[in-house]
Amino acid sequence: MQKNKKILLLYITLNSGHHKASLAIENALKELSPSVETLNINAFRYTNPILEKVINRTYMGIIKNRPEVWEYLYDNPKVLKSVQGLRDAIHRFNSKKLNALLKDFNPDCVICTQAFPCGMIADYKKKFNPNLPLVGVLTDHAPHSYWVFSNVDYYITPSELSRQNFMRNGVSESKIKVLGIPMHPRFMKNHDKDLVCKKLGLETGVPVVLIMGGSQGLGPVEKIVDVLESAGASFQLAVVCGTNKKLQKILYARLPRYNKKLTVFGHIENVDELMEVSSIVITKPGGLTTSEAMAKDLPMIIVRPIPGQELKNTEYLLSQGVGLKADDSEDIAVLVQELMSNGIKLNEMRQRTKEIKKPNAAMDIAKLVLNI
Image: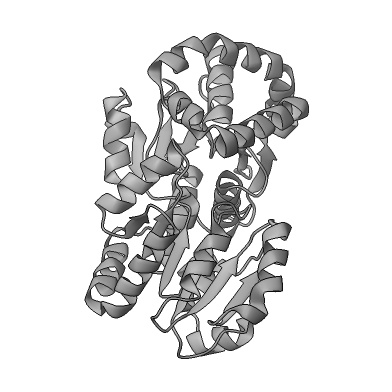
């Protein structure tokens, strides 16, 4: 009798796009094969919890205070070459725990939704188990050099452009599958918009402009609300603050003085419903968030992309005609009013999302993995 398949999923950083993507794939695997055994692990926290805290704190400090430093470090061949020794040392340091995990769980396939654990497993394969299937799943619209390893069996990319990027970096075409960024299956479901509006405390029949700052509520959200609530066009605002309690408290306190209806949300699981009833989303261009927006045919206004992956995402979204970039808060107000008064442009953007979206990515990746 054939044994049940075991799939190990590795990501880094809780409540991140990498994590959500791994959960989406895990859900799809279990839906397709209820007997499949999965293990979904934060690779950083598992192998080195102290290093995880240091790296996360350092990353957030650079992003907030010196974004130009991150822009230099990101996908820089010189940096990649200079840190190779450090990466090898970290992999060696983490190998004991990783080897024990792989020996104990004995997976039939490993799926990585972030480049760092993909590199660790690639090293493990090279030394101990070259036949272990390894699948790297991108959660941004453009790959970077830190993803490229010779013994990855498949790379899952969001688009033809990212496939070509991998090929330019020497990855064989046969290893690249253009399946999309995996998201929760609820983004494939349609909802009754009036019922959703009533459920969420929104006005029915009034266009909704959705404002998001990622899971941590980053970016100039307060300024965006301030300029939009006094804009001339008729619409209401919905803001998702994520884990940013301070932002949520500030917006709640200002509610009585706003001219437009504003509905404030914290960390929520039903973003799909909010996107369903929205006409535009103003957001940071994370790979998963923008893919979710496209799944809901939702045009985007992109604000404050982080140098590196988010800037690359922005370039892709602009090139595909599904998003517009705002340079400042005042620019956002102009773009929102233009789109609200120009149904043709808004519909063109919606149509482009329909043409390039891949809402079935998680299920398609699960099918590939179960057949390896």
